[in-house]
Amino acid sequence: EAAAVLEKEGVGVEIVDPRTLHPLDDALIVQSVMKTGRLMIVHEAPKSGGFGAEVAARAAESPAYRRLKAPIVRLAGLDMPIPHTPGLEKQATPQTEDIVEAVRRMMRL
Image (cartoon, rainbow, N blue to C red):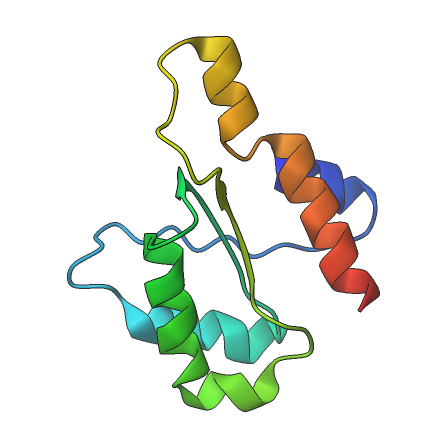
């Protein structure tokens, strides 16, 4: 959804959705960063100690690091247990509008 909104604004987004977390397809992520010069990691789990930190670290240790045009961004859930009720869960995890705004900020850098 966020990619569709951004495309209307003239911002192309490449989405990489790893099918497995272990093993992680590092090559696919590095290839995307080399191509776009940017990396935004979006996941619903809490940010601290989350999987996004591992992806960011691997990208930072790869040859793609020198190709970054902006700092790596992690957009994740709040650092709290994720609530069970739909309304509260929505407030605790990244939503389409959060992703769109984070990409806009990244592109302005």
